[in-house]
Image (cartoon, rainbow, N blue to C red):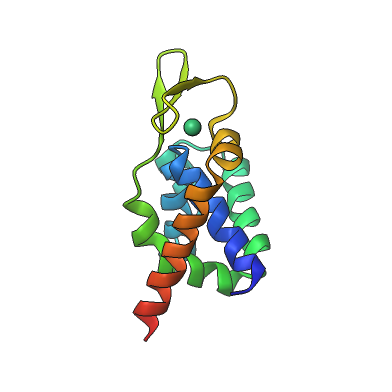
Length: 134
Ligand SMILES: [Zn+2]
């Protein structure tokens, strides 16, 4: 698997585990369903620049637009059914794996403290994508 594919998947897995599912949905609707960024920015209440930033990140990591499409298409179902490990609580975030209230950005927490879990999710996505191709 090219490193860029793993990087793009890791980026998406971290977002979802950190409770930010909107990015996954917005990317899927942009890359696969062909929705415009302005429609999506309105629908999901994300700033247009922020949304373009997410799209650009994934496309850059993937290497190009077509690869990014293939990644999102093959991993969407796996990622969309993940249970986020970070939940919003009054005054901040709570990690259900550590049982701690987070003092740092939830994505950063997931990336630094739960790397194993992120790697497992990425491996699942790759495995399921291979299976659906054959
Ligand atoms: Zn944690």
